[in-house]
Amino acid sequence: MSIFDEPQDAPPPENRTVNLGGFGAPPPDTGTVHLGGGYAPAPGYEAPPSVFAPVPPPEEQASAESLIRFGPGVPDPRTARTIDVWQGNAPGPEAAPHHGRSEEKRRHPGRYILAGLVLLAVIGFLLWQHFATPVSISSVTVAADKANLTCGQTELVTATLHTNGGSGKVHYQWVRSDGTVSGTLTQSVPSGVHQVQLPLRWTVTGQGNFQGTATVKILSPGSATGTAVFNYSCS
Image 1: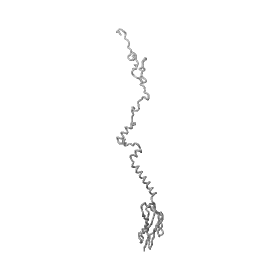
Image 2: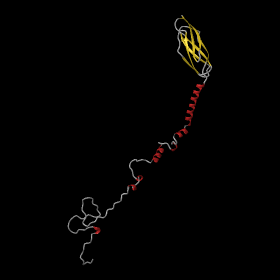
Image 3: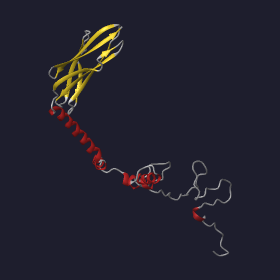
Image 4: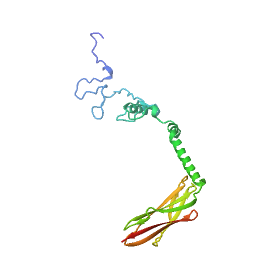
């Protein structure tokens, strides 16, 4: 442009509109974003295109391992186990059971051996009772501890059974001369015992003279009797 040329207005820089003269609000800067209200752009103004970042599809979003979570969350079970073992709250790997009951049997074999021995003992006892020789009585003797009693004394009468050494039960009763008869009594006889004693205590009171007779009667096995006599005198 020469110095003689008439000056002309230069085009507005960067697509900006320049108003010469007059009053009014200046056009908004193309670099400023106005949300609602404000000034409208000048005629002929084109806003630069907006750039939107594409939203990745759900399958391309960050995996769960890269997400930041707040709060305690769910700890790694391997890490939690390690912390518990280190703090003494859980047994170490060497203390963990491996095979349930099979491991229990390997660690405590004596328990099952003891149970087997008890079972064998019970079976043996039952067989012994079934096949053992039953008791039998060969003879009975009865004797009084004192031949003569005085006022208010007690006589001890003892019946002695002579057996074959077998085992079983003996059923018997005592009969006294004063008319007293005991009920049926039972005495167990173990194997290997050849003599069994059956005691009777008889207390006599009152004045007078009295001859006492005590008789034992074996009811089973078999039948047998024995008698003892004593004298009582009180004046």
